[in-house]
Image 1 (cartoon, rainbow, N blue to C red):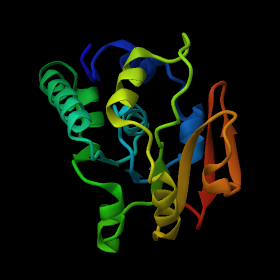
Image 2 (image 1 turned 60 degrees about the horizontal axis):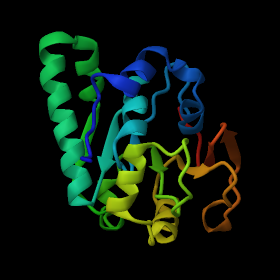
Image 3 (image 1 turned 90 degrees about the horizontal axis):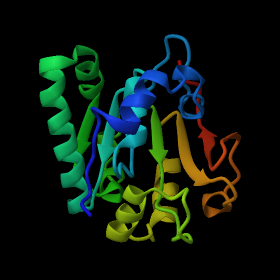
Image 4 (image 1 turned 60 degrees about the vertical axis):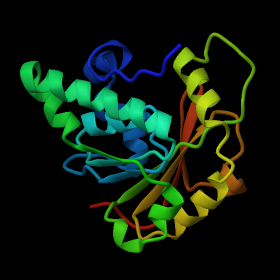
Length: 204
């Protein structure tokens, strides 16, 4: 089984067309509203699914991925999608042009304040391994096998909170404790996961 990222067809293409737009929980969590499309720093890009959704909604997104295997899969997926979009899909091309992928460690990136020119930091740490179930998709199982658990997620969260941004958004399993037991000011809860929001200043 290989790790493959597909932005052209499948689930992401369906969500792009029928996902619910600005009414999606992730859109509310990062602060998207009329004429407000915050720039996003995604510290844990993974397979790029949430970043793609945010770019679809109009946000400029910088994706950081430190794992070389995952980075290469994401890079290949973006390259194939760009090639397809340039020939066949100008709307998709605009979305992909809002995504900037970097093969960098997020802790190192955050240690240089001049790097952070974003309004929102988005963090989706790898959850501890769960028992197998139909709800756990094969690509996520493979991703977890490659990456393992994010042992430095607590430190990453603390550095994110200290950064000069408007808000920090953390994606968590629905029933999990808040990261570092830090109670969020806002919570947007879905069926299986939720978004904990830590506002720092108003988005305009």
